[in-house]
Amino acid sequence: MTSVTPAQKSPDTSKDPTLVVKDLWVSYGKVQALTGLSLEVGSSTICAIVGMNGSGKSTFFKSIMGMVPLQSGTISVRGQGSLSARKQGLVGYVPQNEDIDHHFPLSVYDVVMMGRYSFMGPLRRSRAVDREAVENALEVVGLTKLRNRPIGALSGGQRKRAFVARAVAQGAEIMLLDEPFAGVDYTSEDVIIGLLRQLADKGATLLVSTHDLASIPRFADEVALLNRRIVGRGQPEEALRQENLVQAFTERGSAHDHASTVH
Image 1 (tube, rainbow, N blue to C red):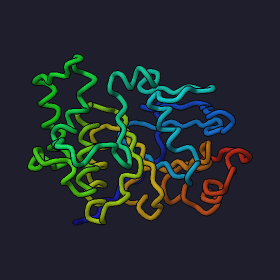
Image 2: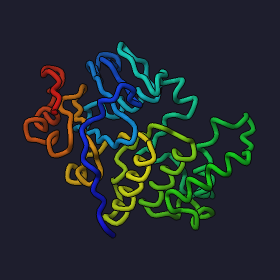
Image 3: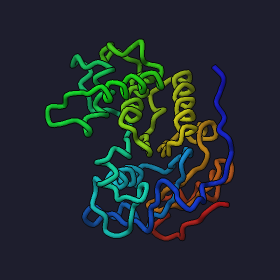
Image 4: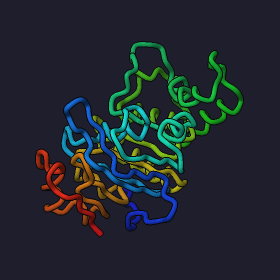
């Protein structure tokens, strides 16, 4: 399969970016997880979020989803706060390891339909519009023929695509993907990269956390290096310079160093 190379472009500087995070501070008790993080990402953009374990990537994603209290700072998704955006289905999350019992007879179709739950009543009875959204999402990720297969019977790469389909069915404008290439082979990685590019080309904003620096130029339009705050930002070949990586992968680097932006 042919590798996908993203069109190189500068970080979005439009007046109306999809995601705007300003001076975000989050702590867990005495542990300071985020320290003044600021970031703007526009539509039709894939932004790789890079940082070591404990750098705040998971906390950052949870903050965008409105799942952790903020000490200070603001998050805007299409001009709305995190909780409001999540309730409206504007933010979709694709976890690294989905908490689903793979021995339970849950089909691929059922998993993708979960993306429509917030639009249903308490009995979760699907409507024609919900079923249409699921069918469209399955087609987008290339899983229509596997729609009735148990989710536990899929390969790692196929499961990742099913969870992306769930976010697509939800109608998310921002998708947060946690290590989407972990545990998949190169062929599956290539398929997922093509899928991400397709979603971005349709206007979605994708934030992809990853430890795999080598794969970033294959899919990312831009990179944000995170060490409790943004310590480097730019196109892959610029952001991944040694001096930025040192700041990103040095313990407590963000607590002492000023955030730098690569142009």
